Image 1 (cartoon, helix red, strand yellow):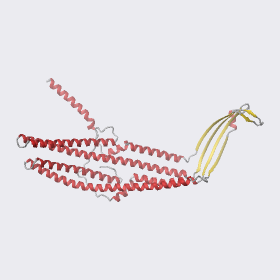
Image 2 (image 1 turned 90 degrees about the horizontal axis):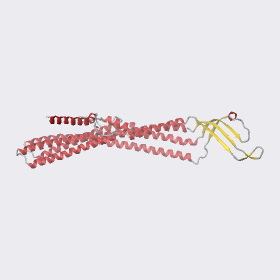
Image 3 (image 1 turned 90 degrees about the vertical axis):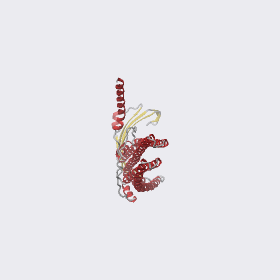
Image 4 (image 1 turned 30 degrees about the vertical axis):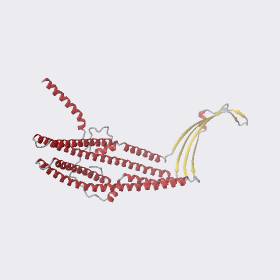
Length: 446
């Protein structure tokens, strides 16, 4: 009795430990696609790098705006002289002199050939461009997350199909073993069915491994420390109906107005015009306002001089002035700077054209993939219904002794393959239609 009580107590402890181990994993709520995308955008390193680039460009814009302000510089100097020198009496004597000076100066740009306002406009456009680059990085990580998410959904269904096959094969093994004991089945038939069940178990194990790797891939995209306890929400897709696909040209027209990779290139093209104007500013004169004040203290060894404070007061001076710098010949540097800026604009125009062509190619690819996915889902659904009907008929014939085990397994394998093909087609269709909406500027969701 005591031994039995100890055994029950030990079993309770073991069960408690197992539950404690499983609770953190099972208590975590499954992640939806939106949850995954939001988390990835908030934690992805590439996105964070783009955010830093935006912050740096905002500082560049601030510096450009502040270039209109006057500057202010102060200086203090101390000079010592030694050795022989000519005096006012026209004789050379050994004298030591010291000179202490203080000054404060400011310069205000009055006209810079429109360089400052053009630089501000360029910096503002560059800030908008890098902001669009940030949005592009967010969209890229969202698409990667969605692709990994769909792969997990597919792996889940494939694992379910594989385990269903194991269940069917297991029941057939039990059935054949009973027939064998009653003399209605041979030992060879039982052995073949056991081999079939073992192959099904291997397939199920491989499907489970693919699912675990898929969860690992997505968790790494999310920058999660571990995939333990991580799972995703499985959307309902069996009865989904998709509307008529818009033409690629219509999708492209919508994408041009909202895709950040196009917006950033267009902003940089506009900025190229300001870069040309900045280069042209080298032809214009520069006008500055200058002002300052200063004083100094001077002492010669052997000569009586006023004290420090009195000299600073007596030598105090102020000045204001205007300086005009007129470029006459600059070794053709301004001309070459203008030509270089124009070449940069031509190159930026090519970059914009290439981005548009790339976008259109992507939309065409997604469009035809969606068409194919629609057709594949419909044909897969018909094949699944037909193969399932054939399996049920073969199963009934087999159970009544009118079909062989080989025929039964062939019908089963055909049905389960059709199930797998249908699952793959449905998720592929779901993904391609989600991409169509995403290119049209809508949220990437299932």
